[in-house]
Length: 201
Ligand SMILES: C[S@@+](CC[C@H](N)C(=O)[O-])C[C@H]1O[C@@H](n2cnc3c(N)ncnc32)[C@H](O)[C@@H]1O
Image (cartoon, rainbow, N blue to C red; front, side, top):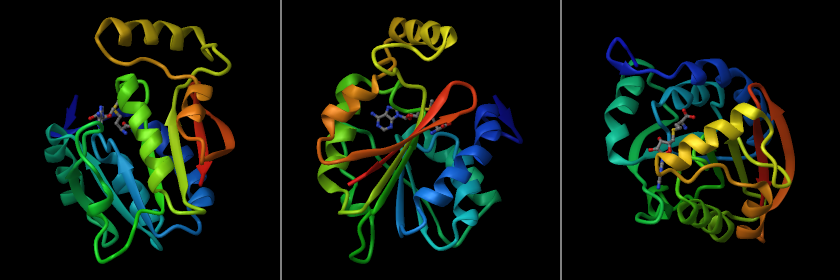
């Protein structure tokens, strides 16, 4: 769907306020946030000006860059970077934090059920290895908890994802096993049967 030719996601409009409230707390002491899978770019243009003390770095696979740039063109922010190419299981991200800085925060939304299992495993292992001590990782989306779906609609969507070649829902315990150096400090219930997982190194 498009609005003024920009890509548009209604769920992003619905959830951005709730997510921002959690990011304000979780990223209060962070400086450089890497967003993995920025999608349309709507989250980035909303969050960056509302978190003015940090720098927000967008990333995604190439196909999404045009749309993210359209949103940034319309809603630029001094602390918001244009997207760089990041495809898990192909590209690294450390070199994209400039001037000797490092990403001390990672944000990703609605990616763990889209990526294939080995890509999510690599995401978790990479964050586990590269996030500095006290770094924070905020991971939003639908997840399985103790081997169960959190709603019937989530179970149905998981089936559709599997049938279309996507990875499908991941269980929180599986994510935890891939990131032994991260502690899952908080699991926040969010609207529409989503969760915000707040990990710290
Ligand atoms: C459902 S969209 C979510 C987009 C946005 N974060 C949101 O919440 O609306 C899934 C995103 O994951 C990205 N993605 C899927 N596989 C990926 C991979 N292997 N590496 C990096 N990003 C990936 C897609 O390009 C897409 O932007």
